Length: 94
Length: 327
Ligand SMILES: [Fe+2]
Ligand SMILES: [Fe+2]
Ligand SMILES: [Fe+2]
Image (tube, rainbow over all chains, first blue to last red; front, top):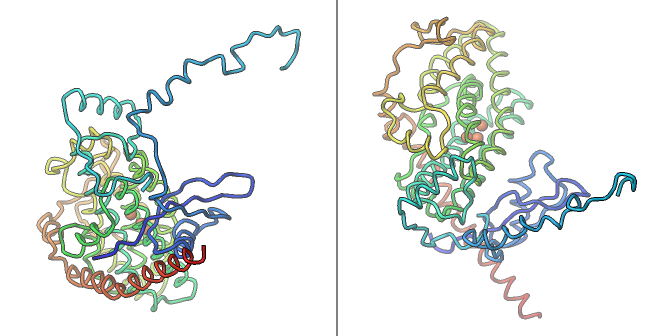
């Protein structure tokens, strides 16, 4: 079993107005066959109207071990949210 | 695969008691585990085995039904059966992709199926003798699969749970088209009704064996429950399936081939007769009537497709080189 067929990540736009969303992966020799296979595997029931395929090897992922340092500090920054600020009711909706 | 770098990577973890405890705490808090997260080796191995087996079952499961596509009795039935078999192929692919996130490659899994190291559901080692079998498979085999798969949508491993959500959405049509076939036969001529009853007689016991050995004899269960890979025990799922199916058989005037089947008021469910576990293990160990044919068919498909895979890769390489030269 030489020469493994490359892996692609599949992203589908359910309908115009929404962004493409990751749905899974497929194996295909090139981008033309990857699109064809993604259509057959992931859109058999009107799941979308546009497909992106990206070579899996092209994705760089953040390290889950660093999730703390990456994402936790934002939890403390409550002043980034509108509810942090007191505006008198008389001012009305803001 | 949902982020690259795992295939062939060293996924081993140092399994200190603190690490295992912290992992279990995440599971208990219903947190999903994702591909790059540290996980106990046993958790990874269990999932690779289970998801791989599940994927193989979807793929091998295409064979007994594919056997009837050209002989479907009407265009309506043929279109439905084609769509169902194509869905099963898709299910296999979703599941292989989920298993690949754990560091095993698709080719490795294929190899293990073809050389007999990996198992698949033994239900597919029975032959499909008549058109009625296609109806009963959709009704009972897909019905039993749905019972098993719905709780897997909440499995602690994210990619498996997501794949199962897609699968479950598609399975309901499989069961309904099967029941419709059986119902049509049961309401047809006496010969047609007899055909439906004969198929039910042959598939009933193998179907309820699909839930696996009784809880007391099930070797992987406790740890899988603790890790929330499994949510219900084999016997619990089997009970749910029987309770759901008996009234469906009664509705179309067919008889479940179990003389001991009785309603148990106290437990609010049916009691069933003894299951022939010797037959179950015989079939699991590869002595089912169709076991050799199934693997032979898969091997032929793999071997006959080799030149196509090679040609596609060579073509892709040529296009890449041409594009580079043009730049
Ligand atoms: Fe399926
Ligand atoms: Fe399935
Ligand atoms: Fe199915």
